[in-house]
Structure formats: structure tokens, C-alpha cells
Image (tube, rainbow, N blue to C red):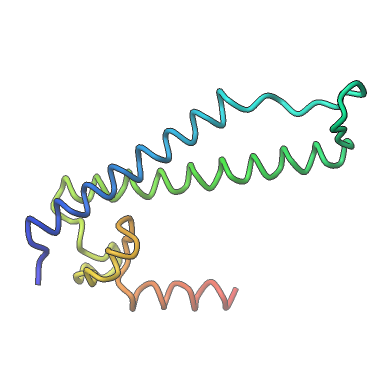
Length: 122
């Protein structure tokens, strides 16, 4: 059963809020976080290893935000083309409860399970 206009609107609003939040977090990370430096004069000294770990965590967070932003953008594109609620693998409808949990989801439960099993087998 296709999604109603009300459901599509609801998911579209959720996706736009997710996109805005991800973009805002990206801007804060880029503009608001000074580089980590080792300063002997400060009371909070970081070892070079701690500074390296902090940069790695920051980079991983940024990579995760970019991945999520890509998923949200793809979902908005599917919505614009009328394919939002259809699984990208089998073209069957994605359960609205699954979309409620993650509006950027692009796979039905069956295809997601098969993909996960395939990734585990590697």
C-alpha cells in the first residue's frame, strides 16, 4: 500500500530536519573547533597521542555526518521522483514503521537482512 500524502509530508519534514541538523553540526565542526595543539603553558595539557586520538575521533564523526547527509539527500531525491517508499533493491514497499524509525532507509527489511548476511559472510 503506497504512503499517503500525509505520511510523505511527515517523512519529508523529518528528512529536512535531519539534513539541517547534519549541516549545522558540520558547520560547527569546521568553524567552531580550534585545532588541537600541545601548549605547555595551559593547565590542560594533551599528550601528542591524546591530540592524535582527538583528531581521529573528530574525523570519524565528520565522516559519519557526511555519510548520513548522503543518505538523507538520497532519500529526498527518491521522494522527489516518487520512489521514496520503494526498496532500492527489490522495488517492494518499505514498511512505514521502518521509515518511521529511519526516514532515510532505502531497503525493505528482507533486502536489508540479505545484505547484512552477505556482509557477515565476507
